[in-house]
Amino acid sequence: MLHTLRPARGAVSKRKRIARGNSGGGGTTGGRGTKGQQSRTGKGRNFGFEGGQTPLVRRQPKLGGFIHPRRVENEVVSLEKMDKLLEAGSYDVTALRRRGLVRSGRPVKILGNTVTKKFALTVHGASKAAKAAVEKAGGSVTITKLKAISTKL
Image 1 (cartoon, one colour):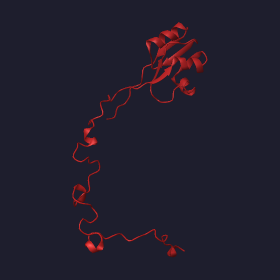
Image 2: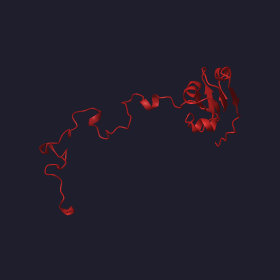
Image 3: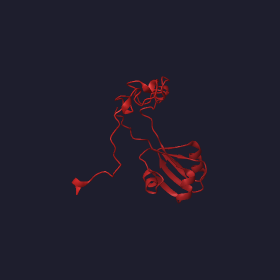
Image 4: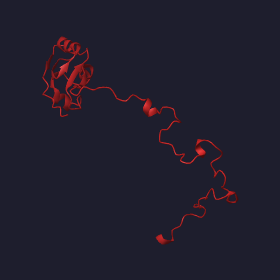
């Protein structure tokens, strides 16, 4: 029954009431040793206190750099990966997403410099080398404009 539950014998002991005189076994220094910072009253230190040295938190740089509020981060798709996973044909961003090459909702940019299949791509961006490689293989790259990105600050 719940009212009969007790801790195991010897598991709980009374706390030692220190500094009640030398005969009690905890007088004089009260278990704190002799002298020094730890023996004084109010000895608790702040979290991160390093003995007077400038704490690590205050040694770190205050701000973490600058990120432009309207920065556009592209999702990169490599031509080599497309060459390996897709058959020749026409692809836009939604088709690439269906095939698993694009995962996020970010703008898609094509990078790379080797392709053997003929692709007709409609994406948000492509490097000069990637565009040249696709055109050399007989394909084409069409760059679509991004819709205006709303920035609510």
